[in-house]
Amino acid sequence: MRMLDIGELGRRVRMRPSALRYYEKVGLLPRAERVGGRRIYPANTVRRIALIKMTQQAGFTLAEIRALLDAGDSDRGTTRQWRSLAERKLPELDERIEALRALRQAVADCLACGCMSFVTCGLLAAPE
Image (cartoon, rainbow, N blue to C red):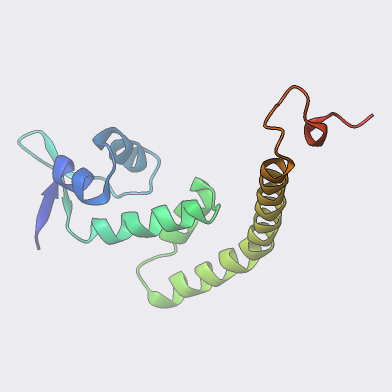
């Protein structure tokens, strides 16, 4: 199996080695082998980090991600764990989407206002 040192892995996944060491410390990555004092990882770690990044962007906590990754090597355990986490996360994602839509509308309203003044804009006035 092809192995990647921590620097090469970091370049491939666009992360600093310190972040990869942190992921290892908190259990998101398995303990790396050492060769000549340097951490080396199997090439399939790139795929694992892609999953970690995707789940982080979806709002999963590190504990939730670790639980998913710890579900085991069996597809059945991982699938069951993923389904459970995903079903709980969907309502949270819907709330985040609505909040972002409201924020987007507020920004559009500010642009449409045209005053371009944070001091005098009526849209930004605190409600009384």
